[in-house]
Amino acid sequence: MSAKGDILACLTAKGHDGILQSELYKLNYSRSTIVEAIESLEKEKKVIRKEIGKKAYRVWLVEEAPFPIEGVLRLGLLKAVEYPHAILTAKDLEREYDVRILVYNSAIELTNALALGKVDLACSPLITQVLFGLLTKNLRIASGCGFGGSGIVLKGDLKEGIRIGSSELSTMETMLKLFLEKHGLIGKAKVIYFKKPEEMVKSFLEGEIDALSIWEPYLSSLEKSGLKVYRYVELFGLYPCCALGVNYEFFKINKEIFYKFMERYKENTERLEQREVEAIHLMEAIFGFKQEQIKNGLEGFIYNYRLTKEQIELALERFGLKVFNLDSLLLTKDF
Image 1: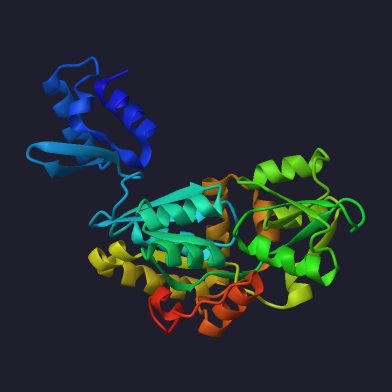
Image 2: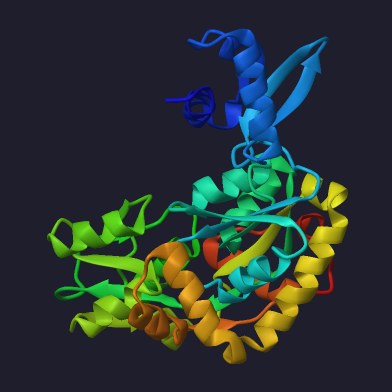
């Protein structure tokens, strides 16, 4: 390993806590070698330093720094096909800015990263963003993203005692609650929460759970294998799934990047059909989904940047939440 490699490994292990530069001197290299390596990594835009005292610095990976970085846009996404317009926009802006796409497995982890400032923009469940926004005051809902695109998959009959997988504090949990209410199974079914969609699917296929509440492209893939699927949009009408949220500190220091992103995001949403093939190739590279999976999954969503206050209030009501200061969570009243 080189000094640069050892520094990167150390920073990866430290995550968003970072490390004092002085602690890196304990690595098996001379002080001057460590300083040169850090300066080189800074030039390569792999790490960032902040002065925290007189001649004292803390160092982070750029992807882990818990604060916005001027001129840098970190877009956080979940493993789903709900974000083709966001991905296309990120790629468009790479010509002008330092843009990075970061993929998370968990909606809670991604939205927490948005609140912390580890990501600057994030597509994550509307409900999750509202809850973290109320708790931290560090994020705002900037626009809509995708509507629909999820459902419940069953192996056997819908009955008392059924074990159902879901993701916690998410659209999946909200819609599952409505589904169970509709079928008189509230309190009569066991909901088991998973952080990763692949783990949920594996548990389902191995018989550890009897059903799962999940999104695209997993929903269509399971449906094509012959399993019984209830699509929530067919039962309850159109509903917002994920929203585009922004870290408020990022918005304040990188307004130019933010407004350019939003301008292109709206354009790409409206002309998504024209760029669908490009979007499919990008999602294949980023998420590892097969092209056929992506094509099928895209049909399950309606993509729209418009998101009304009334739609948000209805989604919150379905979750069992009433927010009296909702305007404080919205970046603008005009989506």
